[in-house]
Length: 374
Ligand code: PMP
Image (cartoon, rainbow, N blue to C red; front, side):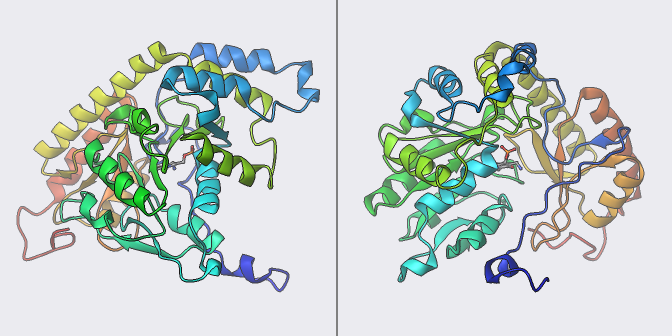
């Protein structure tokens, strides 16, 4: 704490991102990046944009990118809001749509107890009251728990870090219920390309439904920092109000060019993500054979635990072996590890190590670590 920090800065609880190691030799399975390179067309567009025009500000309307997204997702450019990573889009969406405590008498925003750990941070930043809703015993979202008067609702589909997808009909029932009360429902589709059904085709029916997307996972461009929201014009204009009160140029010229080319190169991405999905299924099957519990995943990562072994110990042993995964030291999920899908070669090394780990697990015990169920 510094005496120079005001009350707001003192009160923040910032998000802690997954480690980005400087050591290149590590097998990096901790931040859900894509193991395959970005589209060659996107790289060519970025190279081309790295030119004398960089002396000029970028297009504040992000026209090329909005048009590319509109064409790919079959919406209008006015229904697209790009940002500097979907984290930024989410931060603006919390600020624009969810009621803050200062408004008085507001109901809390609902999201799952186990979900993307940035949501409570945005809520803290904007002073938005929240209530977390426990996932069911098998880590599913029970949509009925969200048919409840609230300040709004947000969840990822598929959820993170569990990887479980929600049926589209559940999402639409929540959107319909909350819409009647004038509340916004945000569906974070960061991992949508790896499974699950997108809610985008339904934004026309639900004026309160906003979907959020990123190029960091499926488009293999985490380093470019681009995300976007899709929703009815009214919602998009709300986001623009926020952005234009903060920073009118959130996307630079390189990002705009690269992202527009990437969004338009569906054929390339379909191919690499088909491989990621095949790897996920193969790794999940093998881990189950080895006695791991693997939550069925529709994302580019899996959420696993080895009954009778502590998650912290497996995490540390993997780190020692040069394999980085993600672990959240929070209730219910302490013994789970989230493992991003790498190349098949990376995953073979991971599996080889997990085979050795699993041999160390006692067959049965009177309730060791992680034995108490969900
Ligand atoms: N939503 C979810 C559910 C995520 O897991 C992530 C990645 N940490 C993001 C949004 C943010 O992605 P980005 O800012 O890279 O677009």
